[in-house]
Length: 84
Image (cartoon, rainbow, N blue to C red):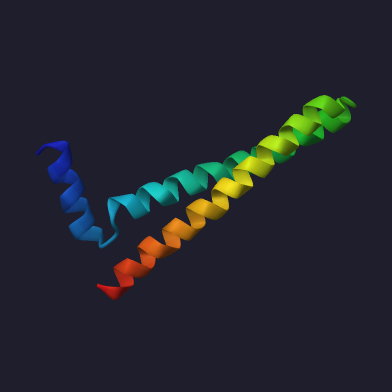
């Protein structure tokens, strides 16, 4: 069985599109990254390093924007599944 056939079988078996699954995985990774970023900001605070803290804040802000975008796409894909 090749890769494409496995993807089709997976989608048929679970009822979840591979795209929805991919969105969920990327969203999960982003959320885990933000959780880690909180720890890194605490480390920067403990070191009194405002420059590093500011960089972490900017990165976290961009990640949160990406999360909102991913969340919206995931909801759209999951709603399509329910309609079928």
